Image (tube, rainbow, N blue to C red; front, side, top):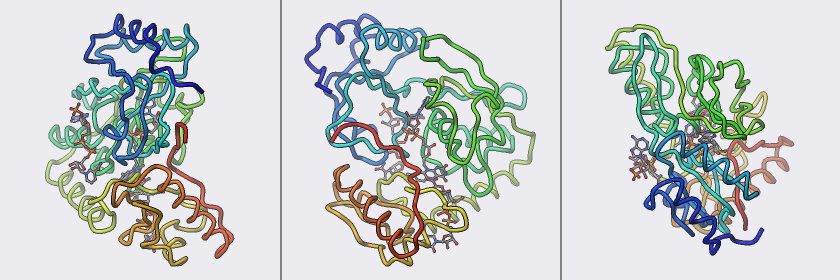
Length: 307
Ligand SMILES: Cc1cc2nc3c(=O)[nH]c(=O)nc-3n(C[C@H](O)[C@H](O)[C@H](O)COP(=O)(O)OP(=O)(O)OC[C@H]3O[C@@H](n4cnc5c(N)ncnc54)[C@H](O)[C@@H]3O)c2cc1C
Ligand SMILES: NC(=O)C1=CN([C@@H]2O[C@H](COP(=O)(O)OP(=O)(O)OC[C@H]3O[C@@H](n4cnc5c(N)ncnc54)[C@H](OP(=O)(O)O)[C@@H]3O)[C@@H](O)[C@H]2O)C=CC1
Ligand SMILES: C=C(O[C@H]1[C@H](O)[C@@H](CO)O[C@H](OP(=O)(O)OP(=O)(O)OC[C@H]2O[C@@H](n3ccc(=O)[nH]c3=O)[C@H](O)[C@@H]2O)[C@@H]1NC(C)=O)C(=O)O
């Protein structure tokens, strides 16, 4: 698709919707991605309120240009050619509050911060999320989970904007959450807010769980480098990391990207990798594991954009 960067008509329309500092043209996305990978967006928009989100969706529909949503880029690889059309970040939607025994978090807030708020409020149920470096929106999209917990177990409802730009409140069941899946991509929902149903707990007990999970994660995962976490899902009956380690791939890489020597299920951006390097490593791992063990590794991470 041709670049829309010089389309001042769209730029002006976006600036009519939100203020000037919330609209950028030809903006490098790697700066917004936990992976530190990815090319430029034609338009990068950070709306300030729900009405602006609705208007951006309606504009993309009217002018017929693609629309893409970013969270914290911790499960997403954007190719080096970047993304055509409008890319939206909800990083201005960050509030987290308590209501009764629920934590209500806007979608651009970090799920780590929602977990921390639950601890401060002595509410139990979000401990599993204490080390997942994504936003609340990304966590719902992926049904993020760790150490036996997952979003599905504590989500009550979500406020979303649909493809037509309407605001809806959906129950957790309506999002059809499974192992690292939801129907959010199929339906094209933009998550604005999530309500997590928790239970009153004891501060020291909640803190002890958080400390234990943090220790486990720090000892196993290469948190010192940018990455997108587990690149592959657990294949039924196997662990991706073990298969990759047993294939002798740790430390192998392309350009600045390599299979982590600490956890083979992670590919780290060790030294200014390009998305092309990173994707080549993914393919090399899939081909090698298939050849050695006959197992197809299914990607957990999403890949978007153009070469
Ligand atoms: C060090 C590390 C550890 C990790 N550990 C875990 C773990 O233990 N468990 C786990 O499940 N994951 C883990 N991950 C992966 C990742 O953090 C999660 O998948 C997280 O939920 C992704 O959130 P994000 O905001 O970064 O989403 P992004 O990567 O930015 O986006 C992922 C998808 O969600 C969509 N999306 C983002 N926001 C919204 C929204 N508001 N509405 C609709 N769609 C949206 C995007 O369009 C994209 O398709 C880890 C990653 C890293 C780097
Ligand atoms: N990604 C990486 O390369 C790696 C990061 N780390 C460490 O992991 C931690 C997380 O890193 P990373 O996620 O990349 O970066 P940060 O979480 O520090 O910030 C990412 C973006 O999120 C926005 N932000 C800041 N505070 C909040 C908030 N409360 N809620 C929602 N959004 C917020 C900021 O936007 P704005 O600037 O507009 O406020 C910033 O651009 C950091 O301590 C980092 O040092 C470790 C290894 C690699
Ligand atoms: C990081 C993510 O989530 C993580 C989540 O943090 C952890 C903890 O619950 O469990 C999953 O990792 P995982 O399957 O690699 O779990 P781990 O406990 O680290 O490893 C599983 C098994 O593989 C072995 N293992 C792991 C890495 C390695 O290099 N070699 C190896 O042999 C471990 O010893 C263990 O016996 C999630 N990944 C998936 C795809 O389900 C993510 O989704 O991005």
